Image (cartoon, rainbow, N blue to C red; front, top):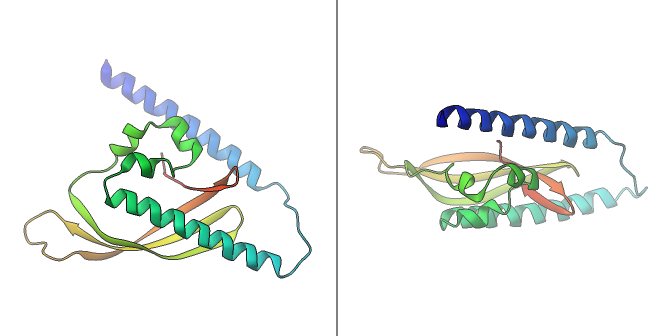
Length: 154
């Protein structure tokens, strides 16, 4: 019975997440305003990319320090509405270790989404794996209420 309730609960969270995502996407389709200045978008894009870069690196610093509750606060408000900090902590295991994660680049094609490239090493906790494997992770960051948030898939 407990497993059935867990599956049902997961289905409700997934349904809520899909509905929320659909609402967010509908909001993205709304027409924006244009300041009329050709230089303004480049300047604001640069500021946004810098801000997202700082937040993304801070989140990774917290993950490296094992401060998952702090990293959780950088997930989108929608994710936090559906998932507890404990749910977030449970996503992480000890089968591998991250090594020196760094924000490599941030690309914001619009004011609605940024893509962050993280370069890091991954050290597998198994016999025969002596050196970290270089890896790249791409993250999506979304704006809400004047702040940028890490999009964590449900």
